[in-house]
Amino acid sequence: MNSRLLPRLSAVMLISMGLMACSSADLTREKAASSHTGASFSFGLWGDMPYKKAGDDAKLPAVLQSINASDIAFSIYDGDIKDGSSHCSNNIYTEALTMFNSMRQPVVYVPGDNEWTDCHRSNNGGMDALERLAHIRKVMFPTTNSLGQRTLALEHQGKLGEKYVENTRFSQHGVMFVGINMPGSNNNLILNAKQCSTKSARTPAQCDAANAEYLERDGANVEWLKASFAQAKLSHAAGLVVVVQADPGFDLPETEELDESLAADHSGYRNFMNELETLTKQFAGQVLFVHGDTHNFKIDKPLSKPNQLLPNFTRVETFGSPNLHWVKVTVNPATANVFQIEPVLVKQP
Image (tube, rainbow, N blue to C red; front, side, top):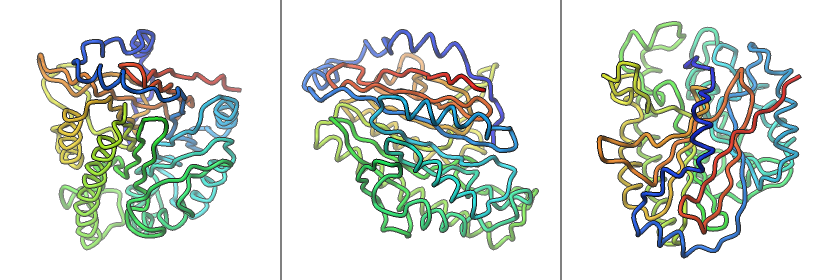
């Protein structure tokens, strides 16, 4: 788990501009936006909390109260219901369900690495990660609806209790929302024997099984993404929101000599992200890509090369422990930018 935990205040300056950087979007996208008259609404984004070892239990109630008191239509939680160095015991999942079902508005849950891919670690109890993923599929998705005191009807890629039930989608007022199980720790891809055994209770056979799982799920994720874009096109959606847990490696180091996304420890995301870029280029509306994992609130347009900015793609990274805050997104399908993003800083006790 990346530990770069201080929010970047420079992102707030971008927000205050209301994503005006998108003003250069081509006429096709402007025309698509002007054709939508859907109602404006807001939704929340949060994740990577509570981390008990970081003392988050004392901070969490204020966050839940803030979200519950807001006017959002629903929220999406982008993974990590616990920290990366505690046991993956069954009570972790039931406690998360209690948290989500305490929310007044619907909550859509997207799995993170701390609750399954990292459970093989000795300090996580040395558990079988694939068994924990199966447990998530059975426990965290008890019905086809969302979690929360009010619920949303969700479409799932898989049947209840089975593979890919955690991949979901739904539409609201001209915008499609897609949740995909693409977690941190390189998407469960294991690169070598040393990585398999370091601080881990895994056997070589379990590592082979993990890589087979990665390949199968990555293919399913891409198919779900393609189908979601196809549906969004057919419905002339003004925007599409894709939510995963992993930071796929958008950021450059200070030297700007190495693209993080090309590093071996981010190779598990490359196939999916290449497909996402291709589909975004072919989509007339706005694409909002949401992730957690590295806990630094950001908003930017990272899919760009010199003189080749991808204007309809925006990345939002949510807050995470020990900075327990959330992000509010207001959607107005009738505007060119569709999404207006605002950090909600919660006063802690």
